[in-house]
Image (cartoon, rainbow, N blue to C red):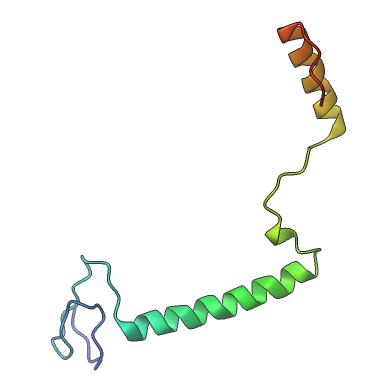
Length: 87
């Protein structure tokens, strides 16, 4: 793949070679800086949105679930195990 860029695309190809060595998966520093900027901006937007929704994006625990489901599951498991299963 030919290019007129003055930067190496990966850490393993030389500048001005016109060839990209993409098999190593090691992008060059200028690409990493661009990606870091994109991720920084995307993170800022995402955090601003989550603040409008009680920071739900940051919630890593799962809610208990619908009470009707929990009651049905408790009844089912109690019958299967022949022991009381509390929800």
